[in-house]
Length: 103
Image (tube, rainbow, N blue to C red; front, side, top):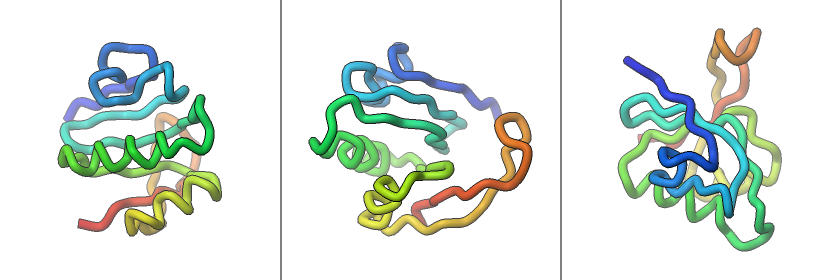
């Protein structure tokens, strides 16, 4: 499987709703698996991250979020995401916390 790093401000990011006007960050896309490594909302308290995650789930993506901060964990809990751990040898040296959406 080929994985693709996608950043905000790219056509690939825009196609996923991961636009530079709303977000800063990067993710990895591998077929229907979307792994969000880093995101900052440029417009606070507008629900943009929550809407983005809902869009991805509605479009059938298997969404995972790496090392989410407490505010992001709160958002993920609304979608019934659960914490686990995974190893990403190219990005991190050890196992890291990853939140997954069951099913």
